[in-house]
Length: 311
Image (cartoon, rainbow, N blue to C red; front, side, top):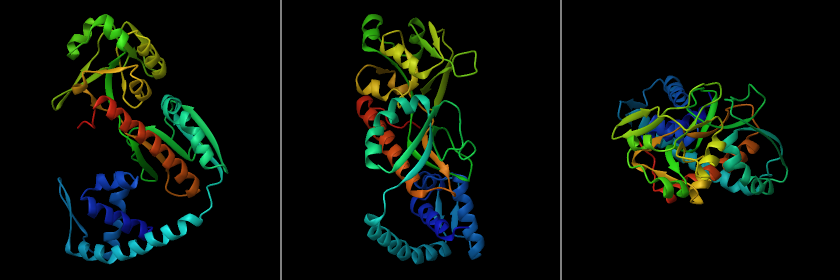
């Protein structure tokens, strides 16, 4: 056990009052956070946290340990801040895998700034829609959606996403605006079929605390998310996609969100890498870049659409 890392994890859980919130803040899985805290409790032979279904609170021993740790954390941070400017820039080769559509739409256009910032870093960028977990396939960093449960992997959340229903202004001018999911049935719908599947994805909507799933008839079905966006932008019909993938089209007002109150939370987008065996400086550089770009797009879309993270 890395005792210092475990102590920092324990402190973050105590400060946020939640294992899940600490996991998001630290870029770890919830299982990894729980494992580190349990290892500390075993090492000290004391219960450090009271756990309930609603919150986490410090025990008396936990409070004493946290007070002892805080001065150490402050000194370590001061040392890091003092030495930071003298560090060398990241250098060497870094292999990264991106979900193809997300990479082409959002991250690849921002690459010139990243490469200019780190002139000694050589980037090996791979794009596909396969699910890849490092280091099994020779990549050091992966950017993809979904929940990460492998405790050997760090997953730093870069952005949230929502399933949205949208269409172009031209389509809406010619066909009118639907005001309920049921009214979509009288419109021209474009569906998306994932790789290896025969049927298009169901359309999902939020109704209060419930989630509604529909399988409406589609005028066309596409198996590529970027082609789906292009069809909608050109006025072919109404689609469902994620707000993050549609971010450039939404920001340019090429697409308009319909039925905004029905948007359903989609998969979180994370930067994933192994906890050990990495060149920390290169991984940190790309992670910061991805979080900055994707988080920036998320905030920009929220400003355009007014959509916030849904429960």
